Amino acid sequence: MSATRAGAYPEVGTSAPDFSLPDQSGRRTTLSSAVADRHALLVFYPFAFSSICTGELLEIQLNVDEFVNDRVQVYGISCDPTHALRAWAAGEGYRFPLLSDFWPHGEVARSYGVFDEDSGMSVRGTFLVAPDMTVRWSLVNGPGEAREIGALHEAVRDL
Image (cartoon, rainbow, N blue to C red; front, side, top):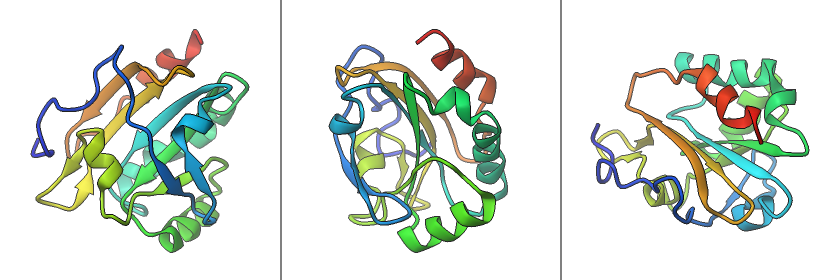
């Protein structure tokens, strides 16, 4: 994997980097505010409209009640612009926020150690952030490696 620094992502038990990003409708989400009352499941993915990413987010959408409830809120994050995310969310019927890390390009993905400098995209990093802003669980897959969705279910099941 050619992310900024292999293994530089926040480890379980360490502080999660805070951020503020617009969603597909232009509304800003600040992580520290989002986790004030529940966990945040951050799902970094390379590109909207790509086949693996569409399949992964469809799996989340099909199980949205497990990933969006009073204990957890899922957030998809990519380096796509908000307009592309809005079109993709509308076309796929996603009922959870898609956050745009478009500008400064990949800044949040870099802070989580999942930005691939060679391709200008994030790799498939997944982080469960607790209300105290610590990373409770993480999974990072390289380019072209699909995420094991069952692992996401396990991560949020016992919250």
